Picture (cartoon, rainbow, N blue to C red):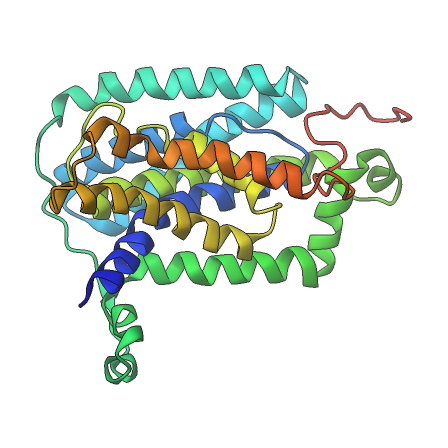
Length: 308
């Protein structure tokens, strides 16, 4: 592979965990619920995956346990925001702080222990004959799963009646309720499933990208994922390319260190986060005259029979 292909392959690998987290965040916000707990849920997904795989060496069981653990955090956030109607920003920050602290405590027993995991790969032989596309012949099953999931969620949200119901719940829950759509059920379901996808992001991070538990190993990826939701304009297909773009920036800094570029390593590590700020600034400036496409009831608790 040449340099471009190596960076592209690294971008896809590095962006996959971001993609799962962004897709989970999109599901949350399309239902009208802000979830700032992405970082904490990713950490819980990562540490639970490390602990259970080292105990069982069963990838499927580990994946299921991780889904349950991350789903429970999503259920907690949903209960606080939907049933109790707590402030969604505060609840999300609490989930992040809780997940960060709990993962640090649980991870003490597995810190620094290599995880001997082998992830199945899908190798389409047809792509081997095409030089530039040959990198797609060596991708693991979770990368293909994330790509398929982006397409499925796009079709679900924009091409099905359930997706239209989801949009209605996020935009105008009182009207949705009057039409017979269960606002509470829709919000609970999408918040919990979204949290599970955030957990999958942590699972991929530790089982594929960096198979060794380190406290705080997400290094702010959860916050980048939250910013990417806005950058992707709540569209799963845009999220796919946005995640790979930031994955490429992360891998670019690593490659520049390998080839001994005379740039301080601290600055190289800042690249993805500086890019996040610049991209949000550019996105806000470019769309300043366009109508906002964010869910209109995003962050607002719903009181039945409330009139807006």
